[in-house]
Image (tube, rainbow, N blue to C red; front, side, top):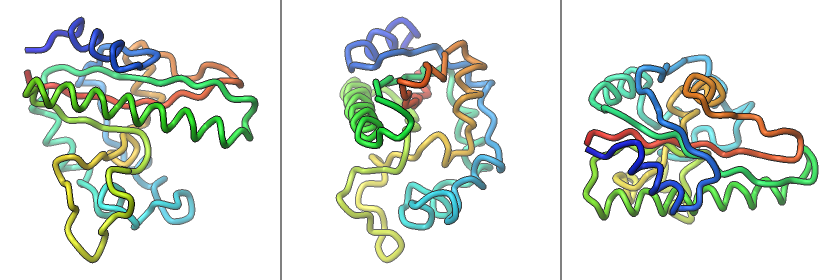
Length: 180
């Protein structure tokens, strides 16, 4: 089984800014969070296999998670000029996606059994096949913590990880759940 210290070392080597042990029992899959993934609030709603309404149901997520033993929360914190610095936010998000991909690749290469929940819409493919064709890479698809119904700031707080780093910082958070 991968210990938290081993996962933390991997997270550090993959470039994450912060990380914390994730207590699986703190994960609460909330309909209220999933409801925020709607056409009025998110431009990705009904446009991707990784987003509602196509992604895994909250009930299925709850059942899947019951099998996992431990986990790690990972963050990439970026510096932005102000709350309107879209370029800074996009750059930090891209950096987080790169870190997330590195961690997934490392865990896969080690043949670890894990469930990864990312930040934002899956970007494995240049354009998603949804809804006309099946997902090209269902094993690589990245479903966000929010799409899974997780209130990210609460998950962070419940696991001792800071979420808000002030007005000139933005944090992207993801997690990895481990079977062994």
